[in-house]
Length: 345
Ligand code: BGC
Image 1 (spheres, rainbow, N blue to C red):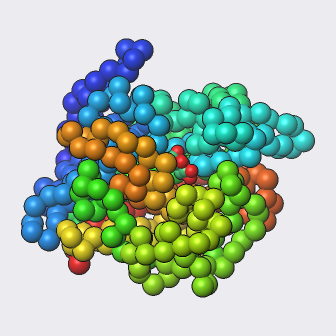
Image 2: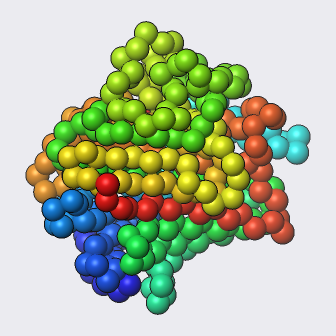
Image 3: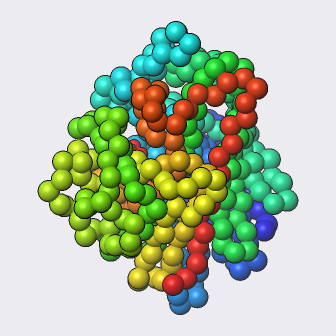
């Protein structure tokens, strides 16, 4: 694994943004920005032996700053939604930035996707670090974090998240990469085969906020236990699909520890991506709200042109005591890992 860094551009307030390319011995590579720890490119071998970039992104910092959608970004302090941006911890009420209708989404108005992170290049990984101050977007306590990326010779991209705090707080990190295994900018992913090891998912209301109910996937369009094309049931007459305008749901993953949780396959390029994670859930999001925009290398992106497999704790867990806790306490060490493993069919 070798790492090469260069300037990518500047933020609107003059901060330098660097791009790091991590190349493995096969010549496959991943590009990452220190702005938002963004996964900017993932170039892996296709069935013809050439490289395909399977990750959506933009050519400039200005586009990453101006556009919504969190392309490729590391997301926190709390991924997905917190109802009305309010929660109570140890009897104290906290009010967070509200940025998605009445709710808090993906860390607020200035989440970790908007931060220029400190960088350290180690021999086997790229390590980003940042301290989120007490009160950041309304969250309690200072939070010290590292996010590391490595890409090994088996074409395994490993994302590793660590954090400690000095006061009880809530933490739920994810990565918001939009994958298109046919190649970024080639249209929709509805022909991809998806398999997810989940017997259940969390029901959403019309604002994509969990109701607290846990539903079985059996007999529903949410049954991905056997691989099926993403587009097969996406227009089914189903209230949950309507509420998400497609798939935008937290699937409850079987098993524990670092394990295989999902497999995404492109018949066109032969690229197979196996997702592995230590996290209890994955938000399967079929880019239902990805409005038309310019993508990398003068491509065009729109609705369903990528799929996010956002490994995470369940959304809005602060309001549902039966969901796994997202509370982090001083003295505890938060650690989560996710791997995207690229192979060929
Ligand atoms: C959410 C979507 C949201 C998207 C982009 C996903 O994680 O679940 O509802 O539109 O992120 O912000």
